[in-house]
Amino acid sequence: MSAPPGLFAQHLAQLPPPVVGDLDAALARPSLAALPTLLDPAALPRLEELATRARATTLQRFGRAVRLFAPLYVSNACLSSCTYCGYSKGLDVARRTLTVDEVEAEARTLVDRGFRHLLLVAGEHRLEVSADYLVACLERLRPLVPSLSVETQTWSDDTYARLVAAGLEGVVHYQETYDRARYAETHLAGWKRDYDRRLTSTERAAEAGVRRLGIGALLGLSADWRADVRAVAEHAVWLQNRYWRTEVTVSLPRIKASASGFQPLVPVSDREYVQALAALRLVAPEAGIVLSTREPAALRDGLVRIAVTTMSAGSSTEPGGYSDPGGAQEQFAVSDERSPAEVAAMLEHAGYEPVWKDAFPLHVL
Image 1 (cartoon, rainbow, N blue to C red):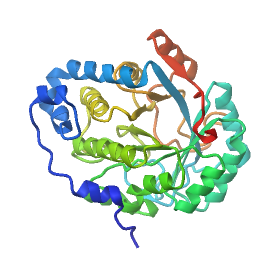
Image 2 (image 1 turned 180 degrees about the vertical axis):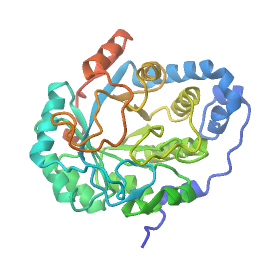
Image 3 (image 1 turned 45 degrees about the vertical axis):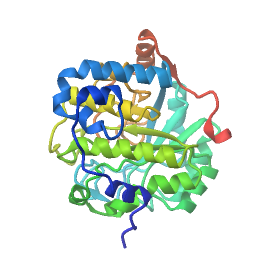
C-alpha cells in the first residue's frame, strides 16, 4: 500500500501554474512566484547579472565559509529498480556491503584527509543495510566524526529517532523528480517506487529530531527540469518555515553516466545549470546549496563564487573506494578528481575558508 500524501505534497498540489513575468521585477524582488521568470530561457542573456546578485546574497547570508564533506558509500546492494541508477536491482554489477569494521576503516581514511563531515550512502536494501546496521555504524563512527548524515532508503519515525540517538545529525533524500508520472516511469519496483513515502521522508526525519535535512532533484530525469527546480525551491522554503530549528540544504545534481546506460531526456547545459543554482539562491536565500564531484572542477570553482556553500571533495562512489578500492561497482563516475587538499587550496586562493568542522556540532547543542 502506498503512503498517503504528506503535508508538502498537499501544498505542492495547490500551487498555481507558473507564470513568466518581467525579469527586471523578478531580479529586484526575487520570490518563489518570480522563480519561473528567473529560470526562463529569456533570462539567459542576463546570466551574469543573475549570478552577480546571487553571489551578493550568498556572501551576505553565508560569508566566505564553505563546508567540505565526503560521501562514504557503505553498500551498493539494492532491492529497488530505478532506470537511471548504477545500483538498480536488475543490473549485473559487483556488489559489496561493508562490515562495520570496514566502514570505520573508510572513515579513518577520510578523517586523515581532513574531513569531519561524512555522509553514509547506501542502496535500498532493508536486509543488508538495516536500521540495526546503520545504528552500529553511527555508534562506531560517532567518537571519530563530529557530523554524520545518511543518504539511504526511507525509514519510519521510530527508526529515525533511533538513528538520532546513535549520533545521526542529517538526512539526505532527493526526490529525484517531483513529476509523479515521470517518477513512476523511472522507479519500476521496490520501496523507492512509492512517491509519497519518498516525499514525506524529510517530514518524518524532522519530527524525529534530525537537525539537517537535504533535498534535491536529479536534473535530466524529467523533461521539464525547470519544474523540478521550482519544486525543490518550494520544498526548501516550506521545510524551513515548518521546521525552523532545522538546517535545510538543497542540491541539483545532473544525470551522470552509470551502469544503467540511462541518458537524460533533456541535457542541462552549463549555462542553464548556473542559471538554476543562481535563481535558487535568490528565492531560497537561507538554504545551503550542495555541489558534488559530479560536476567538473572549473565549473565547481565558479559556482563556489556564486551560490554554493557545501562541497564534496576527493569523492569515491564505490563501497570501500577510499581504503580498499576495486571491489564493487561505483554509482557514477566523478568529474572533479582533485584531492581534498587541492580543493581546500582552491577555496583559500579564491578568498574562502574551507570548513572541515563546525564550531558547534548540532548533535551536541
